[in-house]
Structures are given as C-alpha cells and as structure tokens.
Image 1 (cartoon, helix red, strand yellow):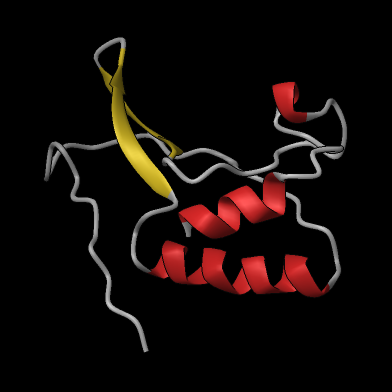
Image 2 (cartoon, rainbow, N blue to C red):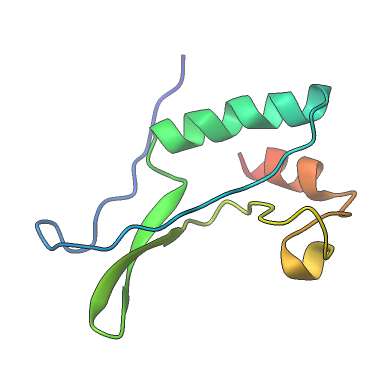
Length: 92
C-alpha cells in the first residue's frame, strides 16, 4: 500500500499534446525492483508533467530521471551509468 501526492495539471481543461516516451532498465534484480517503483510513480501521476512550450501545452518527462538510451552514458541519459539504479531508487 502506498499513498500518492499527485502533481496537478497546471492548466486544467486546456488541450495538450502527447508524445512517445521510452525508457530502459537492466533485466536484473535491482532493475526489476526499480521497475515496480516506477510503476507506482506512474500510477501516482509523477512520471510526466505538462509544460507550456511556445504557447502550446506538451507532455514531458517529470522529475524522475529515466534512461532513454542504451548507450551514450550519463550525459546522454544512457548507459553505462553505474550509479543510476541507486540514484533513481533514492528519488523514488
């Protein structure tokens, strides 16, 4: 059981554009644990946020860091990043 503190829509009732989002986790014990925590964060509305961009409302990643690439290292939101699972686990 967990409780949610949802981030509210900054402009309720206004249309916004969605997007395609993809993130990667390693398929190991720690990665699976983080996946469960990320699922809870998603259910609480913490994964994405709506932001105004050039007069248009858009869905963007929220404050929880996600690995959006298999490579490129930390600088490009990818792997290798040996601290990522620990860091995101602490945030979650």
